Image (cartoon, rainbow, N blue to C red):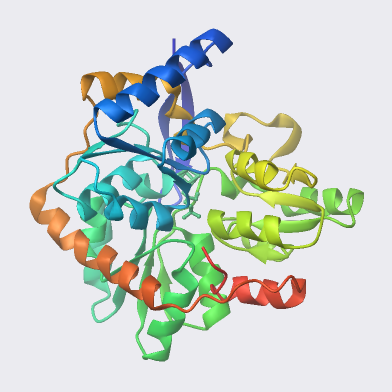
Length: 372
Ligand code: 13P
Ligand code: SF4
């Protein structure tokens, strides 16, 4: 039986909307073994590649790795999906990740465990309202985050992910372009501050990162004075100011593995801790504090929509072929341009390796140059 969780998110006009997420029950140990074996068999039978985001359940991350798929951030998921020769891609993440895979590989079948796995950034940026916003500010280059619908991407000049947003805006700013940025206001504000670019910001926020609290983080830092803070740039400004490394999920995992420090406080979805602990078993990883004691699901540091991916619904879609991602062909073709452009730009970036020197590395990551 799945559990239905109510989720509140903020719209562009600051009003609050209520939606829900359907989170599957944890299987028993026996069911896990049986489901994993069944999924392995089905992936082979169906010529399917499994891709998982760092925020989904550890079982799904491990399965993706063990079966030759990938566990990655959203930039790498887009790159990896396009490069596969298999007929089917199965995406454990949220819907925009499935749509991006389909737009980049329209001839492939793209399946997801639950088609309702959404994202508060996507929900807070309806294509019609966003189109009006763009119409009201002509002459600006439109840069949208990956966490948007196909229709919003179809309206954009560029798509970016958190791994590359700063670098791309720096490049556009140097060319003298003025920008519209959507939908994450924290990431937009961070990039605007770092680059000095002229950016009009849409006012969306991530329900997970928006909950991290700077005053509680300061208290945790006092308890763990040696800990370095790793933060995703969807976190509020006051949290980012306390961070030693700011980066995409992939960049944060790399920093945790390669920096010499042994204690880290991590301000992003706690699904990421699985890879951090696997890569560095001797290091201590602590979750950054959210709303604290009164914590509800809203402040549990885990994305309710990422939690909709489970072993049972994954096996079900592979068996039945349900939950196939469909993208309108015309919109998909228009959206393709802004994604392809980003991948081209990413390919041209010469990403230097981290040095292990924290002061220098922090600057490197903050400049969007840390390797994904
Ligand atoms: P990444 O691009 O860093 O994987 O982030 C995706 C996301 O949804 C973060 O909340
Ligand atoms: Fe969207 Fe936040 Fe979930 Fe990422 S963690 S998918 S930004 S709601």
